Image (cartoon, rainbow, N blue to C red; front, side, top):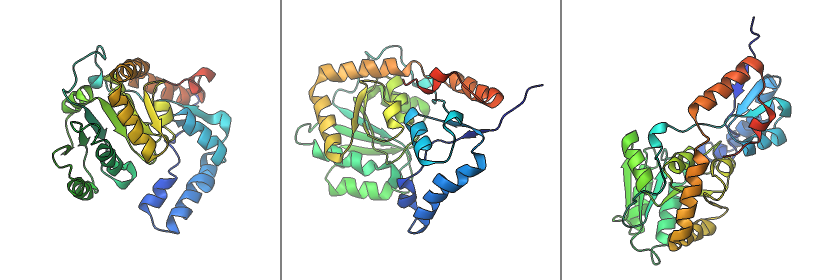
Length: 276
């Protein structure tokens, strides 16, 4: 008879998201419960999380047992994959941002980045995919900055259209405040599109080595975008490295590792240290 274990899946600690969505003192209470109180209920359970940086954060900031926390990286939908990163892209620099339009995703940062590089790259455009409660405020910001001809809010799109955008884009902009991983980074990488992303837990592991830039400030973010657009050779090299980093990620592997954790309560030690 198989002795099944209990498996808890924790994407990440929500940190600044509490502050973004709830007023004080609810934000502080929620964060405290998430970090210190709720984990006591499953401290003896097997835990799966998405990224090595997220695992370290859980070990350092919760009472969960380090030996029971394992990394199981997300896969990539095969519909986003291309055979080679050396394919034709848009004629002029196309920046792409993808996700639900919420304050935590900080799409206003992507709009401001385009504005910041406008003098240097007047032909660059930005397409934002997704819908949500921040759409009206983003549209107002676009108009206020005089970018109505250069920023497009396309709403939700089909996987086929998203694949077309991933393959057409020169760079993905990942501006989120908090993530357990960075699905848009790895989906774009599967299409050979590098990224500039906020330097946060999750993004640090989703971005392959040399597959783009992790930016620690708004100024560094805009500077990284400008530098990559200025250097076609480096942009092409980042594209190849992004593509290679995406090849190890598959939903079949994700499912197999989750099942192994559920049945045995453990993974091979190397699995928790591997990064794309």
